Length: 178
Ligand SMILES: [Zn+2]
Image 1 (cartoon, helix red, strand yellow):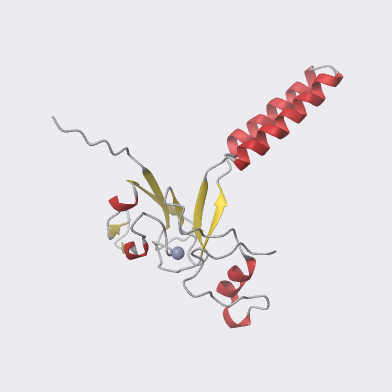
Image 2 (tube, rainbow, N blue to C red):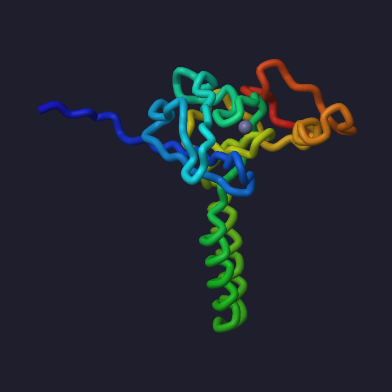
């Protein structure tokens, strides 16, 4: 009997719908290498080609798999439902608990939300097409959101605060200073 010890390692890719950019289609596969090159959107004749050549041999990202743009940013995935639930529970406790205890409940809620945010998962989003990548290897690292990049992509030459694109895009770029 043979046994494959490699665990499932989910990746998710949120792709903008070709006809309706407000809609996203989430592709979920067992790891970055299970992604195919071509997909067809449900209820659309458009075929989309993924830029699978922008994957590193370890499953990291050199650019956006959806559009091929080389500038991406990393952001935290905050569990909004859980975060709000904690605040709601704390608010109820404040009403029912006597004075010193209610302050403690508030402090605990703030601490829980802080922890939730900081240990939360991260996702990598594309400046150009808004596609979101989850579960890919963390190297090369794409820094957090930089508004000078976003501005250049939005306004092009007319961008007042735009910064030129770094060679190789945002892969292993330093964090923005502002
Ligand atoms: Zn993109």
